[in-house]
Length: 336
Ligand code: PMV
Image 1 (cartoon, helix red, strand yellow):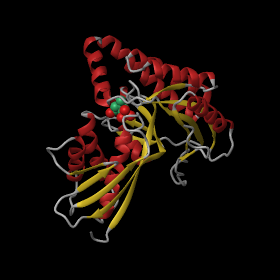
Image 2 (tube, rainbow, N blue to C red):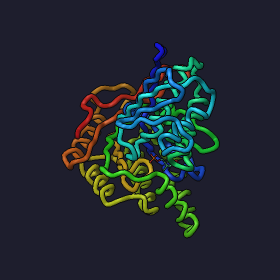
Image 3 (spheres, protein in one colour):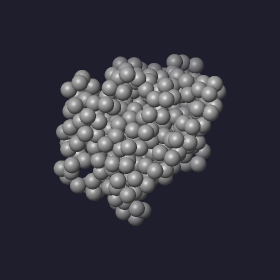
């Protein structure tokens, strides 16, 4: 092994509004969170590139299993270099709706580009990440990859792009894993079937989500946490109408609202995965806010009910020219 080594990180993500609708070009709001994935890369002395993830090691192979193919696709998506040995670690559950796969791909892409001494290039990282995601998700919108790279709030629109949501206020959320995973591809396929069989229902879903996202951007800008919470609840109703919720998700949303959450919804593909609840908003960087306290109360409520939960701050991003802080988890961290 040569001495060249490099590291990379990718953020996990939550989708505040717009999952599934973004696949069809409707705007959504996503955010990178502090938890995600990290990767360590060394140049290899051997002939092939290898990836270790948990207890599995694969060689990059276009004809191999999903992991081997995703790795090969990521390596081949842009500028090439010598074989690498990659070790990657996920800090969030796979299939949990928190963008685990995108976080891994961004961490790996960043570490590989650094090991190959390539100039950092967001477009290249995005392309590598998307090549990986296509193996797993078939028709990814790119929202997970964008959030994994951004680490803060962004407004995403497929085939148009994404931009940072500039705001003066931090948003405090509680996040919990429902304990079961769903395949994003299968859930996206399920929505596609409703689109074919019930086009009028599907159009109402898209139009509803479109309004919710537009109003949520306005609510964040106006620091109106009550309205933002209600919009999250409406989005959850629309997602449930598309058969994307489960009994467990509904129970978790109710528990969060009973604990004082301003709103609650599934995040990601649904059918399992994770749930988010709004604790509130506070001025940028404020410590010990009511929003933080409430996010922790909700996370504790979920944790008492047996779900792995944590509170997280989505840090405000000041307007261009300011210093963009990284999002950070609550100090009280994991409640499971
Ligand atoms: O990867 P997940 O399960 O967090 O969901 C991604 C969001 C979807 O809108 C369901 C799919 C997509 O590609 O945008």
